Length: 460
Image (tube, rainbow, N blue to C red):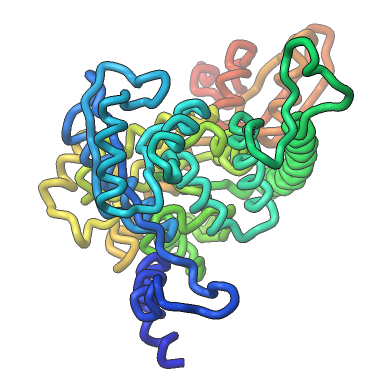
């Protein structure tokens, strides 16, 4: 019990380090090891011609946090300047020899690149360095695997891992039979490599089918909220920007909060009251990061696309982070990738309690309409709710349109994304009077009629 109290306040990686130091990694033990040794890693980054030393240093700082969150520790950094990656080893033969000496000198378990390696590069590096070689992608996937708690989250992580693994299957291992070409080498059957590939493809198909089912269930809930006229506000932002803390502050919920990367992976939805008395739904999901692996974006698309159902995005940023501008751009890039870049957005400058006023003022000037808050102590929350109320009031409007029959999909869009108040089938097309949000309103605009309540009609 005393050990639990001693280590309970530490991060996961810090707990492992403390336990490893207490027991001793080289101490004789009976049976199976019950303490996972802390992996010691060298971090590698390459500065290309379009980057700067500050960019490389910041990215390595972030990679070090990722490694710590995954349960490892960084003992050394190794950087290089290149015009382009070496096709065989990413860093070139000379640097590989230099890195091999550093690996032997520091006795590390792992070499981690702050870039995505090709299967051939990873294979060549492991052979040359005689140690495990990972890239940024697999570190992030490992963190996702540790933090996914819901069934859908675990399915998404498994899909990302299998998609990543599929291109990295190797056929040279002792346990795998391998077919070769040439006289006398052909034979019946198939290689173990092909069997493994087929099994993985079957599992990937099954995972995608199950995730499609989860997406359909979520779509039903979304349509129910739309029928009940409940607006949805989605919290998006860079990982560890304070989205979960802000959700708790807005809604009075008790969602788990931790000062670590990717603490939240699963979608959380909570109700909160607007200043005009209406009820809205706030949703929080996985945070973004620079160079978020494409496999994770694809696997978590069903979760990320929930932002498309929102009428308003609250883009939460850590106002005091030294790379806040880059983080804002990284989030906007992911939003564009999933088709949510055009949605109405309010930038929330969080953590003002630990950020100097000059920085907050600069960000507010650069991003019109931004709201400064401290989710931790509640400062500025009333201003944020008022801003959300005002934006939601203008997000939906009543549109009266006569839609030609060859554009019937727009009528379906009005039903799906809004509330149809009146619908008539006329000789020229379908007459629709609907309350819709910005995207559907823009689609119906070419066929809009002057409303009988329009000021233009109030003539003598």
